[in-house]
Amino acid sequence: MLKGLENVAKTALAIGATGLLWRPWRQLRAARRLERARRLALVRVDDRVGEALLVTPLVDALAGRYEVDVIVHQRCVRVLEGHPNIRRVHGLDRRLLALGAFAPGVSALRSERYDAVINCANWEVQSVTGALVSRLIAGAGVVVGPAVGAAGLLMDVAVPPLVGTQSEVRQRLRLLAPLGVEAGGARLSFRTPRPSQVLEPYLARARATPHAVVNPGGRVDWRRVPSRIFSAACRTLLDQGRVPIVTWGPGEEALAREVVAEAPGSELAPPTSLDDLAALMRACGLTVCNNTGPMHLSVAVGARTVALFLNMPSERWGYAEAPHRVVELAAADTIEAMIHQVSEALS
Image 1 (spheres, helix red, strand yellow):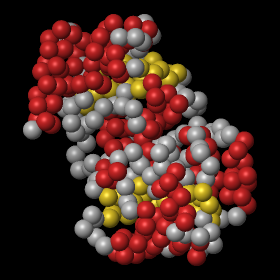
Image 2 (image 1 turned 60 degrees about the vertical axis):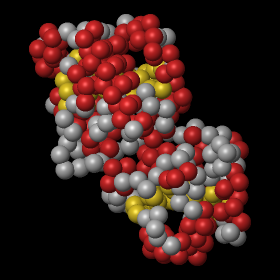
Image 3 (image 1 turned 90 degrees about the horizontal axis):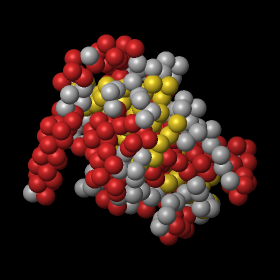
Image 4 (image 1 turned 120 degrees about the vertical axis):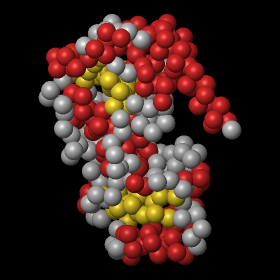
């Protein structure tokens, strides 16, 4: 019921905003303006690391043809800053977006005079926030985005979802179709990591002998695989001659210590920044993790990634192309059955 009420409120907001912001001539001249476009902005104002990284396939597909800025939640600036194919990363404070055109940062972005703004929002459920931000900063520029619900009315070019796939990467790349950009082979990417000095001994060992990153945490509890599965994964890696380095995020140290305690020979990582974690994943070349931000980061730095999925569609969020593996685990499965699946995936 709450979700239904939320969707009704979003629809009403989108329709109201469309009435205020709709300019029919913009849609009529959109195709011609896109042919001449050179400066683009990609918008994704969700505050999750994975969501920010999912913008990078578009960035790389556009590289060399356009100047590309990216507008993200202020907490995600750190994820994309320094990316070689992004001209500038702008952060927005979502808490003040209710002020509309008067929200901090909107006027400055509007003055950038982008030729086109691409709203990289959810392709399945309408995202009014992303649509409004895109519309407000575009000015006279063309707004391209998903044709989803009433939020699609705020787009000058509303792009329907790609039929036959749920893949987030492929659906987002679909948004480049109005520009005539073919990007079937684009992948996630990340800047050259800038690790801290404290991590250097771990990186040196990982480069010299086989290691693996094991990350048992995750932002959402109900998507986390039980810690015993990760301990078993560590034991399998040890049997293969790989030393697992168990990493952890804020509030997850106890979980990581539990995994290490059940798999003697594993190492507990020190506290890591995003760049530390990226460097460690790249040096190890193998990551075992839940469906969470570190999964996307591991893929972005080119490490083989074995992702354990529970209660989420792997077809949409996972990476099944070699060298990566997706392991589908059902909540009804026994721990022993889960351990067997994960061990097979690591063999």
